[in-house]
Image (tube, rainbow, N blue to C red; front, side):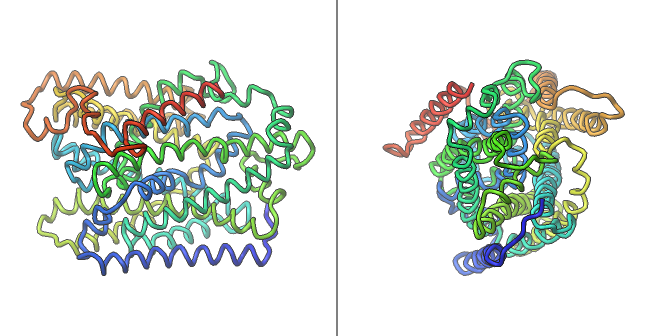
Length: 535
């Protein structure tokens, strides 16, 4: 359904687009004046990020148009079941804050492949660099551009490719000019815009349906459950979440360059710990402001207050068209653009960082800092072009949200295995690492092909369970290869291993409620309560 855009809506949307690009470019100019203009200031914001910006940027990079639109679609079709992808994230963000962030900051690495080289070998570093660049371009950017284009086409009638190219170019401009400081600053602003827009739509829908009581009276109570039994129509039984999510969650939140780069730019270890925990609290919101609106739309249709929806993917468009007045439509459109641009900018910056530091600098060790920045900007352009070319092929999946998580399930298992065993098992060797990465990536690519062409192959294993099975295979390979080719544990490698899980809690941290131990426990308790209520 196309929305009839009023003049005020166009003004709001245009001002937002111009303003956010200008803000990003100004951040780049400020960076050059306040710093030496070197690679660290461009790629890691000079190591000056504090926990509020880290938390907001983590949340904003994660939340894209995929979430606003596809989670509403999933809510409309399956209730709160797909809210598990949001509420399981705080558990892995606690793992990032407690176990991974301290090593990253102490090592002062620019990239996660750099960390992997210090723990294992250069071969592991190079392999992870390639995988991370592929995931940034084809998963983070590609899916986000496609989802955003579908929304803009449905809302405003903008042609698919025009939307993809236009947003990629606008986002690429301030990403190239400003680097990570521009990305994080604009993400912080866009997070606020995104949350305000989503909350307005959810609030309007909840009032229209008659509040929580009106909602519960109009739908099947089963739709409000997040944990589902085997055979549930959602395709997400509780055991698939319990077994499969940690595999993709640890990869995404703890080892993926696109996400963790915000932590790498932290001012110190305390900010690196607290930032992810702040993001964990923010991740409570999406179930209520992204998934729930789809369920409310179903109730409104049953009450006769919304028209029947032809395609479930249009549920967000229909709600905007029928529930929001002039002006607010423009604000919500700006929120959609915010979600899209923040994810794309973060992934572009991460891909540029990975290529410049992990690949180009090896080929040309004498490269100047200015040269690294220049190469990073070229990679930004190339990444945009590749993502633009790939995006139109993503319509094969039932929903965009299922598509992006399926792709993650196939690329993440070997990376998760290598990092988890590397940090918690002192016998994990460099041979075990590269063997696991090679075999696991090959198996993941094969399974991806079987699933992508499942109409011909007959593949019917749920993607979450596929990810779990692949992780089990990778774990066996990791242990067997490490025991077959053991190696001496050097002092540097030993510094990146928790010999006992409680060692991660020895750092006293800040005093008061800002203490990372207290915040971790509080977040854990809150999540347990939420799962108890909505189980």
